[in-house]
Length: 206
Image (tube, rainbow, N blue to C red; front, side, top):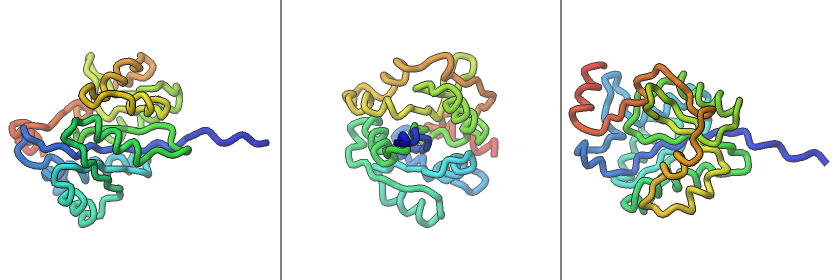
């Protein structure tokens, strides 16, 4: 008997369910100077890096996110997390449920407020995972860890077992390793744009 093929697909999950209270309006739909929104930019980045399954997790103002994806022609699926107010972990789990299948080896997960990550960074994370099968693969620079974070499918069940108040970082930190840390020269992988001041700085750059 021929053994089943090992899972090889890598999906992406973009977390866009929060209320954006510090920003004061939806971060997912904020425009970048090129005319793209944060969300459209991230979807395009993942697609350009060869990720053919991109899931957007909506929650607060979900209809606006769905409408933006449909009108903008973004090549992504949208799932709605009705429990988003219970914490970001609920959105992570909603995204993982949407991508999980026997073919999926891992998922790249990022909040929508890190819109400037480079295509080359996503490719570097995928390449490192395929080389090492490290359970957690993430971009690093000068001791800082960025996004997206690649999570091996073997850890999905551990994430599901967490209390929502803990957050996914409990599992990420427990399984991080030197072989999974990818040093990148990509400011965008570490630039969280979650306040009006950070957004204005971003707009000036573009």
